Length: 82
Image 1 (cartoon, rainbow, N blue to C red):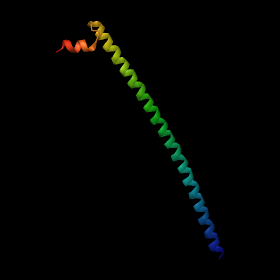
Image 2: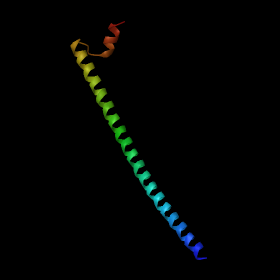
Image 3: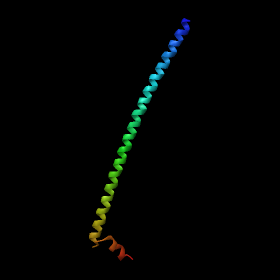
Image 4: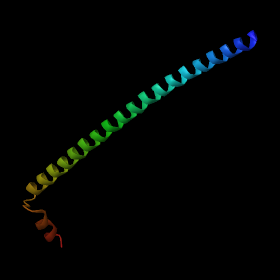
């Protein structure tokens, strides 16, 4: 009887250890998931900023070319190419 109680205690101890390890792993996974979401949001915001910067740069280049060639309206330029 004493041996069974001793084995039961060892088994319970092992189960408690495993439960603690599982909890620790779950916490770490939750932390990593939050980090991934944060990085994803940062990348999304950076892409939006870069897209706006690229559009502005293209607009500036188009404006410079229009001034260089004396074009006031893009539609005028398109008409002259026909």
